[in-house]
Length: 376
Image (cartoon, rainbow, N blue to C red; front, top):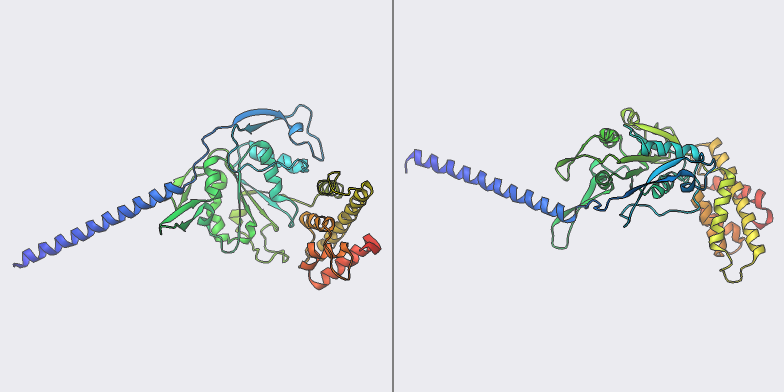
């Protein structure tokens, strides 16, 4: 065989090999697209009806009542889609925060909404309860040091037949639906990963690696983040939090979320007691109910004294959240006990105190004893 024939054969073999690789790659891409479509989130086909309602009837439990005649447009659904939170009837709203959030949700904006507050101040629940009343969908994730930018869009997982399928995450769903996406504990994520979301706060399209395409968010899409710190890295109470990139922070409206005022917190906790202990409870006694409600007043006083001390001390102080108070009440009503101590102290330690350092726990016990006396 001549050298020219041998060269032609080699070239032909190379071309065939390249062609085979191209075919194989096209088959892989086609299979990936097929898998993605098989599990991809299907946007809601049912459209909501826009209805104008009086703001005062929508947000009834609020510190400052809405102006008479003020109205807001909400979405009503014949069949409620995925993502709309359940309404908590006795939820208390703070008008200043409510105005900020409603204006940001309803009016066009090119920035995100960042809520900063100590743990248990109700940051996430506030957004969810506003959305529940507006008929808006909400999805959320919690950030960590290992959370990457692409994790927010979804994840790939193996199936029983060995294939890999992509499951769309909350961010992608919110973009497609025009819903609200919440990143909790945003200051725990890597700043280098978060800056990749900069353009999304301004509703610009973003490239989704798993889909190998650009996605344009719906006009009603909104992105919220919550954190215990303001992203400066100065607060040492929350391990794992860090300083955020300045360019990232510049794209957010930042709102501070304090604990509820004492009177409102007491009112809310008394409503919890009423749900757990009422006329339908076996051996119900009105005097005992009054005693429980009086105890709630003491619990709120204790919580605020510890919170004030935590604000003064800083460092690793851990103030009690409203969740901790709800656990304390729940354990008291259920009769939790520990040998050698009162039910109140036993429930307090299990609900909150045992998570404290020795010094913090001793201070908290002294405060409880001062407020509750011999009962504790």
